[in-house]
Amino acid sequence: MLNFLQIRDYAIVDSLDLDFARGFTCITGETGAGKSILVGALGLLSGTRADTGAIRQGQEKTELVAEFALESASPALTWLRETELDDGQSCLLRRVIHRNGRSRAWINGTAVTLAQLAELGELLVEIHGQNEHLRLTRSQQQFELLDGAGSHEPERLEVRDRYFAWQELEMEKQSLLSQAPLDAGDLELLKHQLHELDIGMISAAEFSQLENEHRKLAHGSEIVSILESALQTVQSEQSGSSAKFYRAAGELEQHASLDQEIATAATLLKEAAIVCDEAGASLQAALSRMDLSPERLTELEQRLGAQHDLARKHRVEPDQLDDVFQQLQQRIEQTASQEKRLAGIDAELETALRAYRQSAAVLHQCRHQRAEKLSRDVTDLMQNLGMEGGRFEIAVRLDNQAAPSARGDDRLSLNVSANRGTEPGPLRKVASGGELSRISLAVKIVARQHKAPTTQVFDEVDAGIGGATASAVGSLLKNLASGGQALCVTHLAQVAVFAHQQILVSKNKDTAASSVETLLLEKENRIDEVARMLGGTLSEQSRAHAAELLGEPQAVRH
Image 1: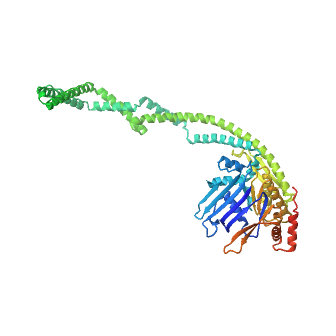
Image 2: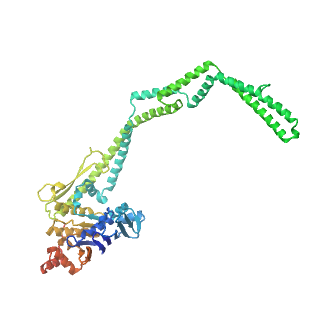
């Protein structure tokens, strides 16, 4: 329930503080006085998008605050606790909108996003404007009406879950099909290529080894000559480095005791001689491994040539044929797996679709029963809203040939007859604007019967009616507020007299710039305001009529 609303520098309001009570509150005043500004402020506090044009002229920001009292079972209180934003059983909303377009919001003193504010706002306030009835012509709103109050929530959730299970399989199938599975000819070619690689391909390591051997054989004579020359250099008895180092070291050792440097030189020469001996051994071993066989060279050229031919065929380097082999093998295995999955997924899809259709049929029965009750209740209320003999009908048709959807196989249509003896037709085509507004109000009242209480705000939804019908609307709004709270911006005295609280909105004409004032009307002031609403000017007759309406307002039976 809304306890308090504070407005600073919004539209033509400079400063406004309003207290609200439980029950039915009417907000009245002359046309253009600023009554709907209060509704706009509540909308912004409920998370609607802000327009900097709403900031009072000459000011840099608008600040709005609202306080709500919450019941223990309130969904809003549950939401606050789940988001760790609760502060007992009260809720304080604050929003500041700056001239530069920046907007900030707080819930119980904690900064929140606009999305969070809107999420909570839906649980605190329902705002119904003059064009509210147009929403009833939209499919989404019709399903929300039919599925409201949680009367068949388990069935609806089961349909949704089974739809998503079916959809996941369908998406998997489409993904498999989009991969363009190989036909028999392409698959046979891949298998041939794989076999060809399997029997003729040389591994990257072996290829490198064979290339090295081929280079040795191709340059064998040159390499042998170099090895022999090097061996002669280090091991020849006459001119080899090894023998010379040994001789020089022996001569130096005879005088090593005379000079430390001589001793060091002798040692180093001996070490050099040993290194030369080791180099000679390596050269000798290399020479012994040299194979100048022409047959081996021919064999290597053939094997390496075949590897190069395979590489050119697959447009890669020879050492990349291993990767080509793996890719071909993976593609063949993937095709086999894909064909196997496609063969089985259709059966799974059929089972999932059958389960979905069964759940959708159960949900259809639940919706049909709720539609019959809603139709009866709305039709009953229409009799008191100037549409005697009128009928309201929610038609629920099961279309089990349609593509599955998360909300089931039902197709809805809202049909209405505003007059006796006329068959119901489509809501949009049959009813006039005034009739649509009253039907929308009746639907709201019926739909709210099993919902958690929230603050209902009606912005001139009674436009275009009068007389007994206006009284009926006032009575319905009062009943809607029972146990909760409803606010109504109205021009009709017949509606205002049903209010538990009446607030007068007026412009302050004593200031240079337009500003808005509000006044909670007591008995005498309320009589004057109702009299003004009845005839525009005050007279003894209009005041007497107003006092009579306020003294004993006639409740409407329904």
